[in-house]
Image 1 (cartoon, rainbow, N blue to C red):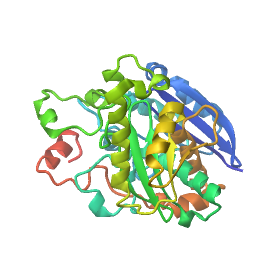
Image 2: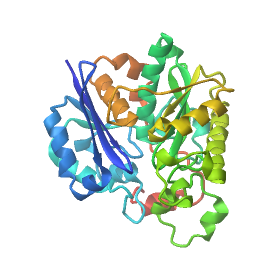
Image 3: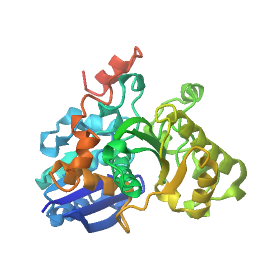
Length: 350
């Protein structure tokens, strides 16, 4: 009997979800602000969980590496810090978790997967961070149950809409084959999404915190996701049309998805879900991910399924079918701009 736990380090909350013998036994959420202020809060939860296997807060991901094996270079690759800082304080949290002597591993991101063709990785980093990969694991599990099919028959596009970023992942024949991460999509609720190159050139002293700005809630100040609707005019249209355009890109990689699965905090807002269902139904069936938890976000749930599968639990066949264990390489592979070497050197990776 396996106890498996997954952690999702969101920009708004850290979510923790655990399953024992395939059934939920841990389901909670802690504010990111509280975790940053006192990482011991998270460590205590994980220690008390008595988990056999944990997928920890993985940021930009690593090819399945245990926490006591990571070095400074791994920490940099997990967080891709700007001026040695991480906007959600992940480096500080990771250093603290090292003290816990936990059987904690880090999940890969979409770019690490061998199931994604190499040509889709060229000059791209954010094809979907580790948490987005974990959400897609949960979506794949639920998708196959919904259609009563084997994992190798899974074919869908996941659209995740979080408090900060949107992201889309394409699954075909049970494998992740493509993704558009939050810094490459259109307008998010907090994030500006893909950044105009000319705008980037105009910004002096570019800081990573900028990618968390410029979204819906910066255009309509103090707006909560639950209050976002068509009355917000061009902002509503930009958000909705952006998601449809992003979906159209992935239809090149997943040509006949059985369904489009909406995931994340904004997918639970009735006005947003209804509008996207209306707009996207012309491409395939549209459905909201139900999930296994009452509190923890989908990424934490998917991370728990990954932990269970890696521990040879009930979800081993799912993780094997998606070829997560075959992940390899670096998030900085396939970069062909002349500055790539300088970037690696500045980050201490040369």
